[in-house]
Length: 351
Image 1 (cartoon, rainbow, N blue to C red):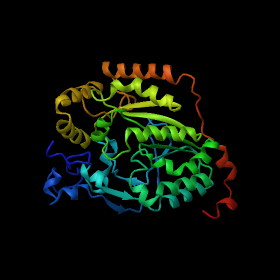
Image 2 (cartoon, rainbow, N blue to C red):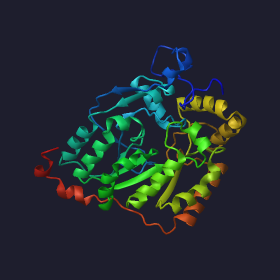
Image 3 (cartoon, rainbow, N blue to C red):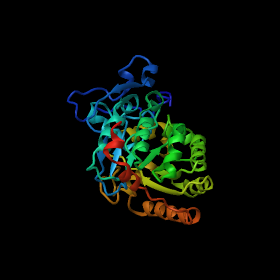
Image 4 (cartoon, helix red, strand yellow):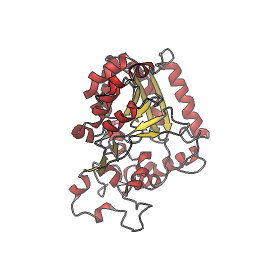
């Protein structure tokens, strides 16, 4: 692994499919120093809206919002990589080091929630890229969004793999007391060695487990997302992970199956042949078996869980894990009534 770029997930920069100009997929040919490959660039963007309508029947939220595009966490499997093409960048290394920042996100959200014809439906904070990625330390946009949501008493689901979420415990505790927030902690593996290469700039396994404990102890509903399950890498951990997070107080556990759409297939295959060459073919073939012989899958209903023998074994293990460790856990429904009650011209004049 002498040619491996330490500290990053993607090792290549596939050409943007919307760009007519071709360029080398190897980022080493584009920069003179290794340090340049690790440097992150923050780029201001000015969208007209922060809320995105979710049309997929596989997603349980009506809207999502992402204060950042691109993600420095560098998770090699991330389905959001392909969206970076629309901004003119590569889904590879560019996705991890060119982070688009939406500084007016909270203002845009407040303007939307002020509208009296807005139908209150739960919003997913993140869903594309992590709202608590390292950029949040500098810009605090997620914090600003939570402040708006709390002032409007508006429900939100958060998904993250960064311990930075504990910074906002003051707001999250208040929101949780009114049934306005659920947190999903993404935990792909309990093996720190695998985590380091799979998700190089995320919080460590230890820190994520500690984050679950802290959130639960502060009265916040926590779901654990084992996302994605990559057959040949982490599917054997389902029962152990379920027990571990249940012992910490997590209320539920869910999963998704890895799928390598678009440029992600090229990026992932390059990565696994460099990091885990002894099992590369085995893993790739198992992924294909779960998606009708392909690495990619865009079919509603099957893309998130896969199909076939391996997918069924994984599904059965997850069913058993829930029965053993989450059978008596209470569910939480979002409270939509508070927003309806407070929304009037007098209370929204200051937003």
